[in-house]
Amino acid sequence: MAVTIKTEQEIELMRIAGHKLEIVHNEMRDFIRPGVSTAQVNEVGEKAIRKLGGMPNFLNYNGFPAAICVSVNEEVVHGIPSRNRILHEGDIVSLDAGLIWKGYHSDAARTWGVGEISPEAKKLIEVTRQSFYEGIKFALAGHHLHEISRTIGAYAESFGYGVVEDLVGHGIGTHLHEEPQIPNFRVKGRGLLMEPGMTFAIEPMINMGTKHVDWSSDGWTVTTSDKKMSAHYENTILITEGEPELLTCTKEDY
Ligand code: MG
Image 1 (cartoon, rainbow, N blue to C red):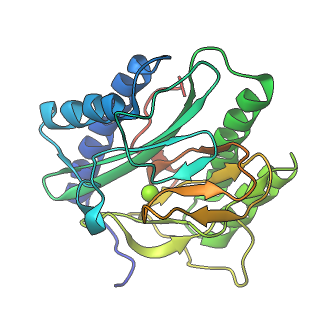
Image 2: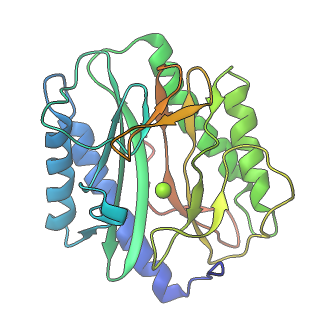
């Protein structure tokens, strides 16, 4: 599938999908506290998606059994919500969520601390978030995609962190995952020449230790190979004539 350029009408639908997802993330953020289960977080997220008139795009995607991926501590992504997984003070929890509005997808992830967390965990979350913002300085028409990739990776690695290579960002639109793939690390070649109207989900996954990950026997959960913490930060963005537009993040409170 080729990289798609969205029309003004399509972009407007993606803006709405993105704004709704931001509201969903805010509701989950406000719910996170010690003692709640990851299944409860999923319920809050799914309820918010449906209340806003959206459809959860992760639910049943390749058989994923929930609306929200809830990944705790050493879990990088694709954590399956469970009644038996209780959040404790000091944990960090990565929430990856998405929804469909009138046929258009949005996709965003945040990592939050549960209660008080260690300074090391705080720093990991902040550097992961900032690596996204460093990367999108190059999310500009006339630039090449791999400038984003290289910048994200170099920034995170400058803190001694491991940058996950097994999972990458992606184009997004009428499908959750469209071309191109968007690595968070230096790769060969310059990559796609970006044009206004392209929409991407850019999503650094950054580990406190090794970049290597393991895939769980549940078929989904990805964990760090050294069991150290991992953080995730993602927004759906639009390439414009000027600065990129963040479709899933209109406020500065992230
Ligand atoms: Mg994504």
